[in-house]
Length: 142
Image (cartoon, rainbow, N blue to C red; front, top):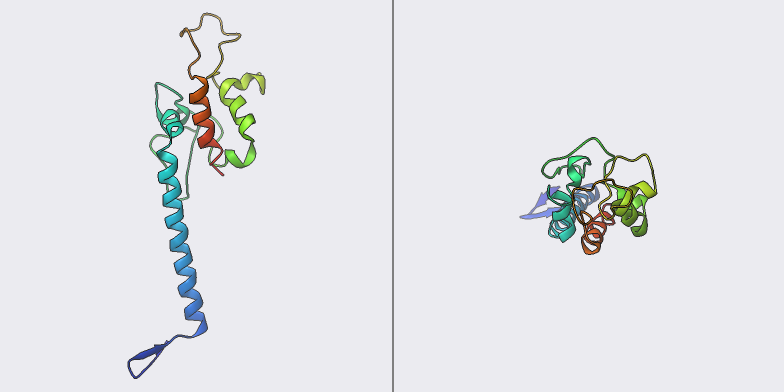
């Protein structure tokens, strides 16, 4: 930067660095907006709630490199990029009854009681709307 008569002349490298900084700040603002939108969704509350989905007891969900929300598990695969790996229908099946995809899974069937001897509840843990709410969150994790 060169100062001449109370004005500044910026060289091309300084201008490029300024725009890089500006774009990274914009990305951070976009990430913050994304996280706020995500955690306000009904499915996020189900994922976090120990009485409902309680997904974070076993799974990790890291929304960005700098954020880890509340408690996190490390027993099951991370869900941070699950929306890029599976379709909404595949995610819905995993949540409803993962045993139909992987019979050896330890993941509980949230939308089915088929094959469970002496279930503790009279109905599945999550209803169809709650499962769809969870899937709406999972598809956004890319």
